[in-house]
Length: 128
Image 1: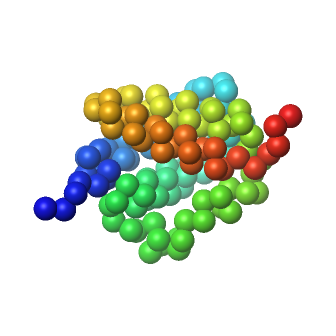
Image 2 (image 1 turned 60 degrees about the vertical axis):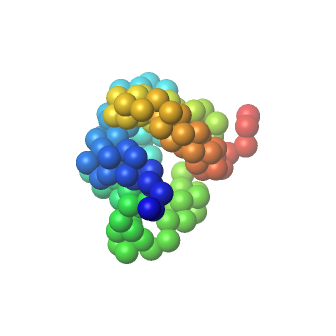
Image 3 (image 1 turned 180 degrees about the vertical axis):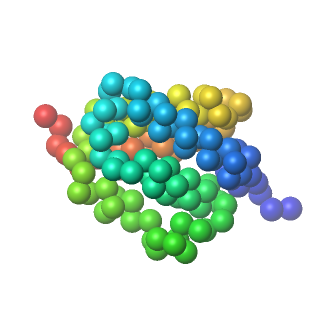
């Protein structure tokens, strides 16, 4: 028997799509996320790309790589100044979305821990 992927555990693409939608909804209304939200020019494109990325990252279909190549997430985000406050705001919005879309608290915490590492990795500004 194959071990369950995060993709399977969360409920697949429909749940990931809802998670991404809730995440961007929170970014649109959280005043602390205004700077990082402004880095996204076209939210429809951003929502689609994040859905594809998270689907692949969680062990689902690899459509992201097929369409966009290797994720190179840090390199793709390097043109945007991302500091500690931005990473915290991003993570706060993702945490709220996780609570709304993922019923399993242990799974929420597992994903939140992984997302915290990703948010920290995207930082490219010195603390000031």
